[in-house]
Amino acid sequence: MLKNHLQEGRVEAGCDEAGRGCLAGPVVAAAVILPPDFCNELLNDSKQLTEKQRDKLRPVIEQEAVAWAVAFVSPEEIDQINILQASILAMHRAVEQLHVAPEFLLVDGNRFNPYPGIPHKCIIKGDATYMPIAAASILAKTHRDEYMCRLAHEYPAYNWEHNKGYPTRDHRLAISAHGVTPHHRMSFKLVDPQLSLF
Image (tube, rainbow, N blue to C red):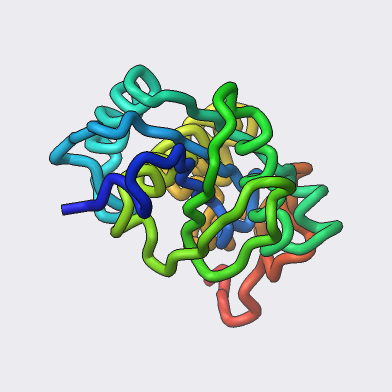
């Protein structure tokens, strides 16, 4: 069972990102403040859930959260500042958009740049430990997936509606065959030299 908070009685926002390992598309982060008594048996780390379960949880989180926000960092920005800094920037942007100011940030992972005026704690596997982080992981993932599915209509050759920009074999083969798009991250190794088209 996930924990509701790190410290009772404090306004805590969970922060997480999605799309860090992708070859194309933005990195997306979410920040979520849940009510102190929030409870949902299905809520878990987004990677442990099916797409259908994530899609079912998203409206529940968005309706019941005290506050939530989602933020994007573009492929161009990722190429300029690197993916780690871009992931942290996306989380900062999400926190900035919250209409309720959190007193503390629960951040998934082990790296974060302090957000001005708000203390934080990095928690490895935080999305499988704390509800606000799990909720943030679901919003980041579902909003990003939805965006990649929209892009897939413009660039059908890359199969983004299925691979969501991750480095699957079919995605790398499409890059080899059709080249890159404005949505690819040029600082990433886009084509595996061991992949043969034959």
